[in-house]
Each structure stands twice: as C-alpha cells, then as structure tokens.
View (tube, rainbow, N blue to C red):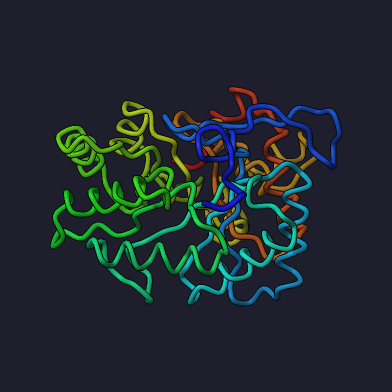
Length: 307
C-alpha cells in the first residue's frame, strides 16, 4: 500500500467541512454518496474529451480544485487518454488524497464486458493510467443479461477486498435490476451498491423520474446524473424551457447552464451531477450552481416547462 493511503482506515478521511484555497474560510459543502464514506463536491467533472489539450485539462482541473471540487469521473471511453492525463495531473500536483475518483467498466473497448476477468482487467488498466492503487468508486456501465449478476457483484467484491476499489455503483441498470442487485448483495454477503449514474436533466427526465428515482431514494443510493454542459442551449429545443431558464437565470444573474444544474441539485436523491466541460468558462458556469438556491416557485416553473 502506498503512502497516499496511509490513514486510520486505509483510505483518506472523508472531507465534511474544509476550506477552499480560492475562497479562504468559507466552508465547502460536501454531499455523501449513498451509504458510503465518500463526500463529494456537489458538481463532478467527467473526464476531458479527446479534443481538449493537456494544458487545457490541467487548467480545468486546477481551477476545479481551487474552487473546492474533488469529484472526477475519469471516463475511459477515449482509449484511456482522459485517465492518463488525470493521472499526470494528480501526480504533478500531489492531489490523489484530495480527489474522489470514479471509473467505469463494462463498455470499454480495451476490456469490454462485466464478467470477472473483464472487470479485473479494466480496473487494473485504469489504476495504471491514473498512477494510483485504488479507485474510490467503480461504476458498472453495462447490463449484460448473458453474465450472471452474481458473477459481476462477486468480482466487484473481490476488488473491494483487495483494496483496489472502495465502493461500487451502476451506470446502466433500470429499477428492477437495482432491486435485484440489493437482494443478491444480501444473499452473497457482499457490500451493496452505493450509487447510480444516469442520464438526467431538464431535457431528459423520463429515464430517471419514476421507478428509478423511487428505488434510488428507497435504497439510499447517491444519484450521479450525467449532464452535458451545453444541454440548456443545444438539446433543449422547446421554447418554454428556454424561456423559463432565461427568466430565472436573469433573476439570479447567472448563466442558463447554472440554473439547469441548480435545478438538478434540488431533486431528491441527486448527489452530484457530472458534467464534461471543455474550458474554464464552462466549468465556472456549472460550479456556480452550488451557490444558487432556487425557490420552490422557480423549481416548479422549471418542472412545468420541462414536462
């Protein structure tokens, strides 16, 4: 075990309240991910895309960290480039112990599938690229009916016992499968899942709201919505959504994206929306959502506009 994990319980202590280098004595808010000990900044970052240069990635991550951000979903979809860049950033900044790292397995090109061998290989590849010996959160982003769910959950449990993974969650499972996962975990005596990643936003509510959201709240899972930063401008075609966003954004003197993320943060079960940004300006817009308190009337207006 490396020095970066030398704490009382084998892992860095969770941040409940701390001070931001950028804001000084202002306490930072942290949200607990389900029943885990993970405390994350209310807005997470998805790994940078292949079009973002290394210098730009470092600028984004430096700014995010300075603002109190600590939650990074590494994203292995671009042949591991994001993981490698994040790994170099953490190493150069000595930042591993202050970052909550999430990584996905299942649909990766370098190790596809959720069978035992595929999961173990994918995690080892991520750890190598990230220059670390553990992941804080492992997300299963493939639901393969051909692989027994028991095999997948036992494989994840083996990684937890080996110290390579702290907690696990899903990123491609419906409400019934979430219930099944909890039952299997109880039968096998393995740790239950603590988080569920999902596509959710003002322009895409139907996949999450209803059965999935009910199970997430019922099981106490941390919902981690995936949201593109430009969703308010590019994906929200309907005029009534844009009108509502624009009016509320002007009331708070912030960008439309800020209000879209603030709406998400007001929803039950939502822990931390995760967004891909390509520059510091976009980052500042989404992070600003953590400082906006929407009124019940404003939330209701956005609900009506996006129905």
